[in-house]
Picture 1 (cartoon, rainbow, N blue to C red):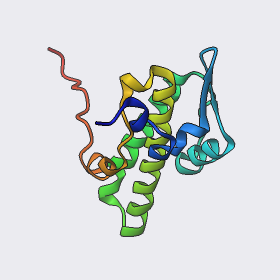
Picture 2: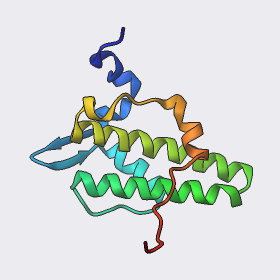
Picture 3: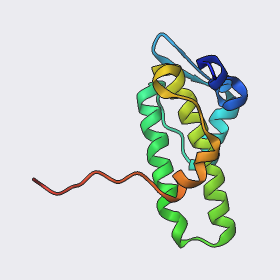
Length: 126
């Protein structure tokens, strides 16, 4: 039986070392900042954890949507970017919402998550 501490160890998500939240403000290491900027080409000007989570989720959806139109090397780069951004997103959520709420990081699930994005909300008026 695994305990909560077992499933949230640093080796399950090393990005936990690169994220901190103090007094409601997000701190990211230089490595995490470089990954985000390098993979997205931009940097959101925020220290708000919710806004950064929303930014990362949006960027991951863009990477998923582009994948079908790319050659093999660009698609591989998109998948690697997706994995890196999801790791940072999970680390922020874990520090912001708590490990018990978020759950363990499961890198083995990233491949299926990349190819099976969550449904987009309906824009139809009901």
